[in-house]
Length: 577
Image (cartoon, rainbow, N blue to C red; front, side):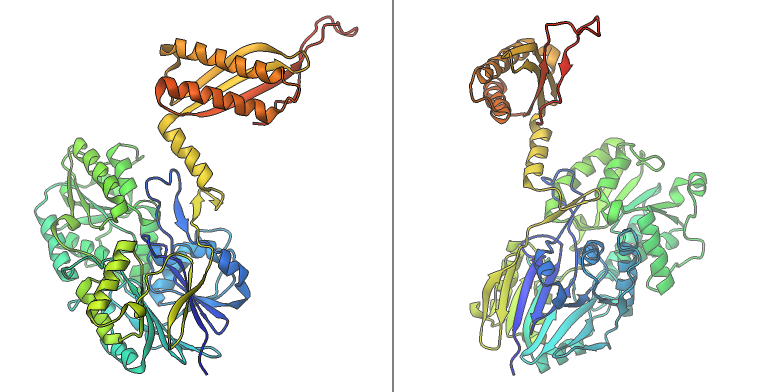
């Protein structure tokens, strides 16, 4: 009997990060990764972005569990939000589960969740009609695993982030025999990492990167500030080793980083080459000579670039970038972050510090190069390929690599977010779509920021705001007080008196016209003020600020109250804006 198989791409395709895929097999849903992505420049004020869970909410009773490939934010970052909606088990390696627990513990809504299950490359989880196995992969964090869901038609294999590195330490080594075995048994469809699919040259080995970090530390004779992703354990080990060899000590800046490092040490995934390597307090840090210090900075949620900006601008309460410091950026920024990184480097140089980036001097990546991707396809021999994890051009580059090793266009599909892909032994086709809009997180708000709010934020950031307050007596059809105008981020009021006077006259005319209209409507009044004022301001300045008309209504009484000597205007509740 053949299985009914559907794959749903809820995130991680045609974008950077936010990996989340659902395998619907005979009515049971297996979730592969549950990640987030960091906002790009146009998402003003947004902290992180997570997948849309609408499809899963509609089918929540069919979800079997969440299967995680590794412990980076693009694979586990959305777990706290997911688990607040779904009470299902979570599976991952020991390291992945420990990092997932740290992520979940920071959320009060799911802090008591405890349905975590540790697996290894020897684990096999049997369900009614399928089984799930795992295989070791090489990435920048120990405990990275690929996932194989075995069906009657063959295995559904999801790689997660991976690369091939022949010099990898045992905790990071790929299990090539497991890949060969999967290929021999039959792979129906491969969902494979495309993050580095444009890279024609193999990535340098982690051993080479470690030697480069050591040379950098050796020849700099002042303080070194290392910017890294908190959960990049391989890079952290290389920094620790280089610091010990150059007689330096390491200070961990940030609560998140310290928790991850302490957890990694406890699990044996990270070792201290010297017992007194870590600087335990800021007081101790201040007493040390600068040429003996390495400060590791990761920033909020492991994203270091914004933290470097604050340090360069002297906005941190304690540790800031100073003259002669070396800022050593050991993470490879995404294409969307390149402009932000360039601005950050400029700010750092203004302080008198130096900047070095590993990505400038060597081809470093934790993801598979073109040769790695083709080797994987030759080992697994998949019937179908679905490139995932990357922007469209990367998915397309991955597809072209597949054609070079013999797959046809009918065997490769580049998915869009939300595609429901039906697969069997005979064909692969798109049979529908699921809701897959971005869910934006701003502070404690989850999904309460939409395109309209973002559009307003963008306008506010570019053209500012113009507030007009006017008081009317609707019964007497007259304006009681001339408009009071306020501008923020639009024009300097004192230097634009003529503009403000003309704007005031335009508002009065629009209000008077509405008061004389027999079918008076508050909505029409405010809209007329906005339209007439917007046209004028654009004509004069070529800018369109956000216009907020505030209309106040009062009733004036000419007869004195017998109980009071003074007659005051009685203010009604202001109209809603």
